[in-house]
Length: 201
Length: 172
Image (cartoon, rainbow over all chains, first blue to last red; front, side):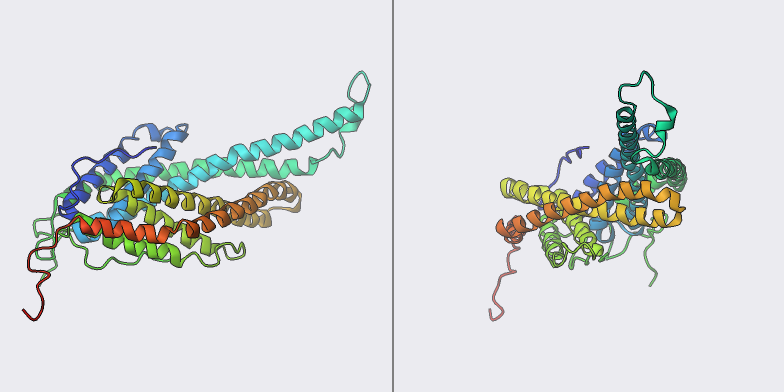
């Protein structure tokens, strides 16, 4: 997924003003994958959302602390949590077809050997199916496929929970508010909600 | 995994291009600091640390892209992506192997031949990934990416005019 181009960047302007533009766009891109990603079959959309979360995380890691205060730093961690969890799901999505292909290759090797054993016979004698090549691999590959299928489902449920938690937390609104903040004398204004409160003294 | 080093002097009001220069210098240095010993497949954390450093460096280049001269920027970004991809080609099988070996140990013996057959394919990928990484590391040296990144940082810093009076001699 290609990142959207951020317009209006001024290299000589303040870091916070420019970073705000980038974060706003990356945040919008992240949310652009909802509701598609709430469908477990939308594998590509989920993969793209992971990349969007990564982009948001990195820009926040670079700019949150000097520019936007505590909630933005927390948002960077939230983006990382999201990226990591979707990454685990992605690993299952990548591994599953490979395990299936390996299992298919093992079965195919057995079928080819069985045909060779049958030779010119009018039918395949069931007794020839014993101890075929790679037959000992079937069970483990089936177990691995089952494990990855179950793990994918469980991780996807966790993803849904995490996303709902972010929504309950007001992730987007709070980050957008934090972006509009600017430190005053090295502190965030006292009018800030959330953790964006100037240290006393 | 090494924690990203803080960037000295960053605040909300610092000019974007100066932030770009300072951040790029630190993240570039981190990449090269982690390059030693990454081809050793028994020490998989080294590849991980360098991969993380490459991702951070790539992110910095992309975030601050408008501060850099376009042509050398594109070439440097391409090389950073290349090394990041090469590190991924080694790291991904490293991680899979770790998980699959643990998984195989927990299963009954009858399940293991299948898992080991799958592991054999991942091991071949790890070896291929190491060859790709070796080439990419060699290319880093040949193309002197370090110096080119330093030049990008200098070019970004030069975008911001020095305030009048800042260069006044101490004795004046």
